[in-house]
Length: 125
Image 1 (cartoon, rainbow, N blue to C red):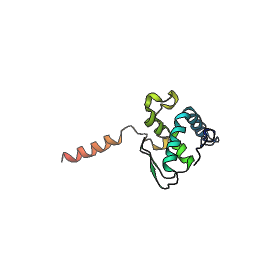
Image 2: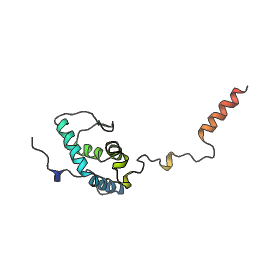
Image 3: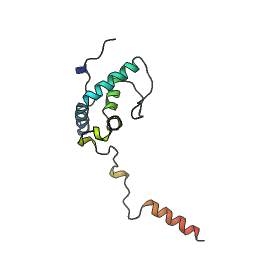
Image 4: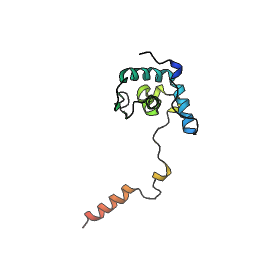
């Protein structure tokens, strides 16, 4: 089978949201790596279907579509595992895991303090 030309390997993200624009920029920053990894995966997985576990970061891809593979290769998790923190640009070193405001607890005591206090009061009896 004929090899895919470099110019046809493009970012799989749209341009309609700020997060997609940032993902496109990240894809283009690491494009030389992503193209090489993509070729290796597609040569290995050509004609196969089903789940694929990334040997670099351990993520499981449930679809072997080219856009899904490219999106995974451009993810911060994969890039951090493949290149290490030193191999990333400064703008990509931020922690990929974020906690939104709806998942934070606004209280003066932490949940652990409440549980420890309840258990301690029961032990004294």
